[in-house]
Length: 228
Image (cartoon, rainbow, N blue to C red):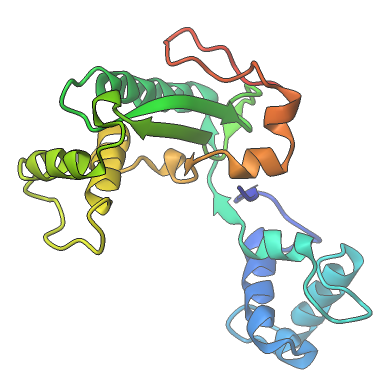
């Protein structure tokens, strides 16, 4: 997980992308002078000085050590997006869930979606959504329990039907992963689903699962939204 900034947001009068780009450059140089003189980001040197001071004041760079803080790391990795109206985001979510249901109902599929967790702005019904925050857990189909070779062989047969599938695979189980993602995200993953993650490790680190053990979204159209 990370943080998403609306393109209209300003921090001390500067775009979030200015902070993101300058912090990413600072990660390479660790140089205050290089930060301030970053011509690809700042039209004037004074802009660099202002943003550097803002990074200190806002705790993005530690004043004592000069190191980028955890908060600074988050901003450096942030996404800057145009936010999407709630109604459109809901349609994208419904389409995604439709593909999940279709995938789970496919008798030839080699894996299954077990849980979908929804969090973030769509869960909160905010008027505009940056992206759809999802965590997805899956497992192999029960007919392949204890039979990875059989699962891979079936995946090879399914892959043969897709002309756009990769021709070379680093690992046999990469085919299983490709089929899974193709099924639930489609030929091209919708930009709103770019942040969807497999597994719940990030949610566990934030304590979500332990706080809300019964709040997993069931795979039905009548969603029971996850709420903290």
